[in-house]
Length: 549
Image 1: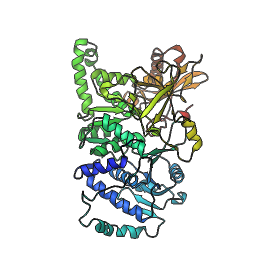
Image 2: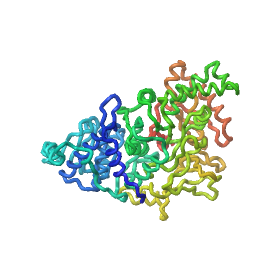
Image 3: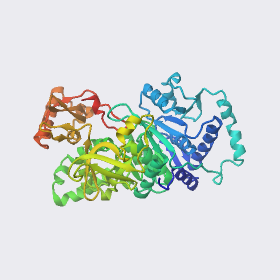
């Protein structure tokens, strides 16, 4: 266990930044750190009065918001176990997670609550709405009385109102369970990842030491908070420093995100590749392909000045005040990464998984290597399960402070993931170079065996296909011993070019011929098939490949 403590991070942040802005809903209300402290104090009284014990489970579902964050902090700092649920899950899956986790209390947005059936959630005693943090439902006769009496108890405990000198939080040991995270992976129904306070504290500690933020810096939170990546690095880490976090409370499109960046001017930007790639394809590529810019970029003495102008334009799209952009959740196209590096844009790629809360590797943008996802964090051992880790691809495995204790009520899955020596088997394939940089080649479950036993990583092929103008996204699969690319077209581009189906097919066929020049014969794509709808994805925007095999 590390010496740093998650709840102590919360305590210090609130006390040190008492009168400063903490949490804001985009175009909505702002909470100061003292307001967050008051919500925590209120709910600790409510939890105690309804008989909630430390270690009891509290589920939380809704879009990112200041109240979502406050409910999370109130739960974890009480010693209860938070069960964050992605708002995109179907009602039947929400029922399952709430029942499987044995949650006794639920925080929910009103719109999601209206889709749920309380009779199918057997352990839930009370439900609080995220909009007003007031009861929506209770199986307890005395909850209304508790809420009615709450202000009286607060006045009794804090006669002058909650003052800085009054605020405190209970001691919660690092070996206590903090969270059960149900995340839908690309291989089927989700499992409940059990994360200790120690794992979350280790992630926060690393970020505080290695990522460029300080008190009062601004952050825009648009990644789902119920997912480990957004939770740790757009909320827990910046909150611990006293940063001001603005939550985009609706499902964000790249246009909404860039508008918010320009208004808020965040100091650090966290993103998934999908957002970066859309901005690159829709805003940057069309500009640099125009004459005379396209030929000026090919002139060595001129292109430095052009790159400088392109960099200024791209930086402005991200608010112009950031130190770096950290990409995680999936692989970033090498073509896009190379372009950003060429113009001097500070971008870096990290690697993580929910089972590590989530961070496994990262380096700052100035130290990053193209194609790599950084070096291991200081609280983990990471190695490649192969005879020659630098040259021979093997499974990436890790053990240490960040690693989960297992899957909730699923010993079989736990034993399959964590071996007897404590190594967590990621299912990801990669190599590590002499300097410790990790390079991911793909998922062991998505790897395709070539005609002579060659290992084919479909992500490599897809990264090239996805950068073509008419392509929104793609999945490469094996059919009848040949590689086939399923492509969902970029509808905006197809409409703007007024392309017929025949013209689109011809364009895709030209892409296929060009594509096959990039790879050896055993990786040749035999045909491209138009897929009529967007591919189904996990919360971190990875395509659920198993649905398309």
